Image (tube, rainbow, N blue to C red):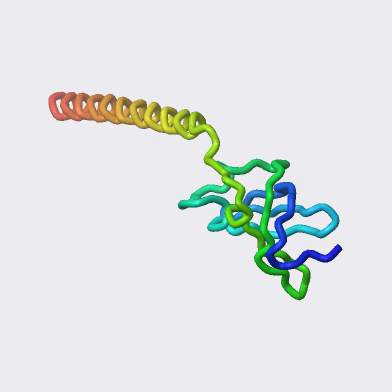
Length: 124
């Protein structure tokens, strides 16, 4: 069976990169879904939308002479939504917790340095 441009097929996500995802189509090989063809709207991180091993419908946009396929999820009519956003929020909480600790450390450090300088100036 030969893949033709315009066909809609089912495949499995095999790798996630910052520029897109690779999808294996059984018996046909692997193709790339560019980050701009994953979902409607801006996709910064494909990992926020898809997981390795996930089944997806893809539309074949182009098949190169070397057999490489350019694929699209959004053009296949599949709606991919961002995964639960609890993980990024947790990451933000850790970031703000770190920033608070650093701020506290900096204030204490400056206070100790100031006290040490005063003692040094006073007692020579």
